[in-house]
Image (cartoon, rainbow, N blue to C red; front, side, top):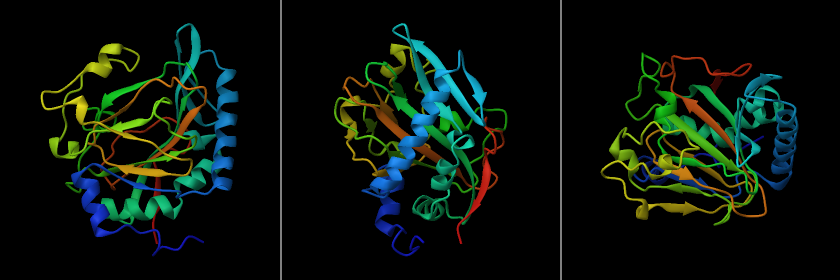
Length: 264
């Protein structure tokens, strides 16, 4: 069993999360756990290979596309729908305890169990954005209930993030901006990656390099991006996202999505 005390975060880390935009926990998951996650990703990739277009299969929603005349997996939404071990990870206290501290609640809703693939040369990018644009779709779909963003996203490194594998980039201090407009371009549109609000400066970006098992925690207003994988290796990450009770008002795709979790 995971020791609750040793997996809590400090007051300084909480301050860093809200002021800088993210915190990082090195080697939060061990090599055996990462190997099991990789097997789940291999299973997802195999399932995606049998699909002709974006669709839901075995409880997971596969968002597919084409780039450079090859099929690409943009993301698998609610990856745990077809891979139960990923749901176990999403409920692991190493993730949920820090999130409960950051949300200020021991109860919350898991909105994301998402697998992101960047295969060598597939050209997949995630341009500059804040996750609030994916949570709040307007029309009453989202409310910041706790006044601090009401959402925490976690990212587990599955394959080493190197300078040329499309690593994550963050803009320090961006949570203080609130919501800003990065445009409505699709991620595959090169203009999306160039969209810059007035007070955004790309030269301030911090590149996150990481080993398998390293884990990031960041908020809905943290500006971030990741660009093309030009390496010869995969770069995959597992994303889990948690919302304060009552913040989310829409149903996400995937069997069992938006499940309720409690940290005891």
